[in-house]
Image (cartoon, rainbow, N blue to C red; front, side, top):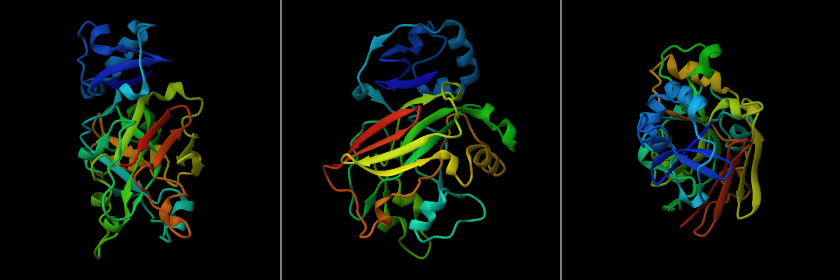
Amino acid sequence: MRMAAIDHRAVGLASDRAWDIAEASGGAFGPDPMEVLDRWDEFLAWAAAEAPDGGDTYRSEDLTCPVPRPPQVFGIGLNYADHAGESALEIPDDPLVFTKFPSCLAAPNAEVPLVAGNCDWEVELVVVIGRSGRDIAAGDAPDHIAGFTVGQDVSERVGQFAGGVPQFSLGKSHRNFAPIGPAVVTLDELDDPWDLRLTCDRNGARVQDSRTTYLINDVPRLITYLSSICELLSGDIIFTGTPSGVGMGMDPPQYLAAGDVIVSAVEGLGQITNRCV
């Protein structure tokens, strides 16, 4: 199952076609993607039995944010050893958690307005929670996942590291600094959901290329850790971390400029394309 949004209405995707979930279900499910996620198990059961095969053609430019108002947004820092190395930072014993405030979420092909400072790119696998829970065991974690999507964790480095205590959340929460999409993809759509290639191209040049199998804290571990502290809610999203290849780690450092185009992709999930303005 691939759930996306077109004009802010929840749709199912099948190849190059999309079908409106509210219309196809006769109103059993509303048009709001967050409502669908809040009833995810029920929706999947309905879709398995009654989802239409057809739909209308669509363009990638028509897609809006598939998870527009998550209750909570978790970010995980230093979750690939090579990225920790290029950042000259020590790998923490437990996951390094911050937030990106929900107002920074954007459509998969949204423009990214750059701000003063050093704006950087970070391709990430994003987890979407479909079933709420506390104290979730690693073996049960997949049951709480609605699906995966592609995320770009745009980060302004001056603000991120300002002051005696780094301001990760503020440096990563400017307008449109979290484009995600193109769709929420269920795990059964993927050959191996725990080993996915993720890449990032800047103006056609490959800058990041890794696999999620290199995550220090894998997805089940992150769900277990986070749910041991706070309840995970349906519709929550988790940015799982970025591999090496960010601009901050280059010699000399390179940062985004107006006109740059960033293409972020994850195997089996698709890609998002964001132009900097």
